[in-house]
Image 1 (cartoon, rainbow, N blue to C red):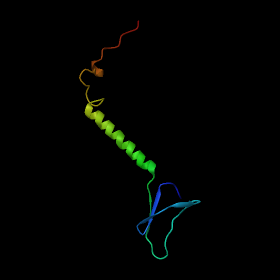
Image 2 (cartoon, helix red, strand yellow):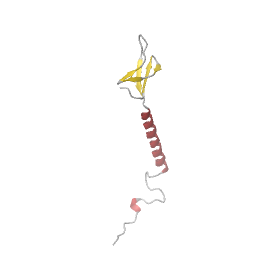
Image 3 (tube, rainbow, N blue to C red):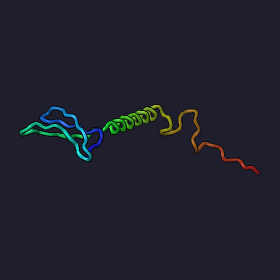
Image 4 (cartoon, helix red, strand yellow):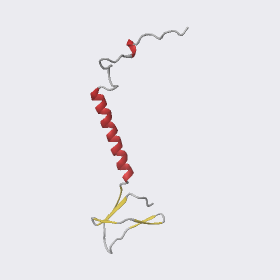
Length: 88
């Protein structure tokens, strides 16, 4: 089934992929030909880029000590907080 992101090559030469209903159409010369289809949608590339960026931000925060590991100097840990006061 045709969907944007399909690529095709015939004998190593890239060909335009078009649609006719549910079918994909490419030009193939007479005789023997090696036809290769591949699917490389842009939204997958974008998703990978966003995921890699998120991992890099997380690693930067981990290295800087922002919310990872023991409490940073000057920041109270939950064990060091005073007990809650009563409202009575």
